[in-house]
Image (cartoon, rainbow, N blue to C red):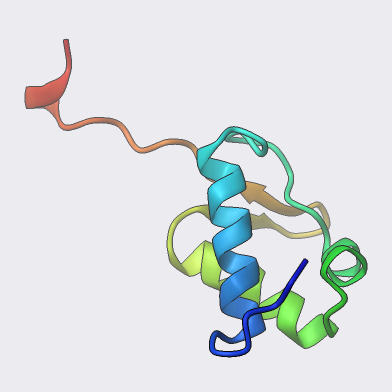
Length: 84
């Protein structure tokens, strides 16, 4: 991955993972890569990988299961007035 110097690495990783979630690479309920796997994949420190996963959880895109890892959150239900 080519890093943009004007954007923090954690933010760039967040954008990549957010896009992969949106594209279905990581569908709802699937596990995201572990901290160790993210470090290997992106060449970052564990602190950076942990921050990315925390930011995804804070945004409601993921949730943590103790002892299991971080998984993609279910898709939000559309508002009742938009359902077919």
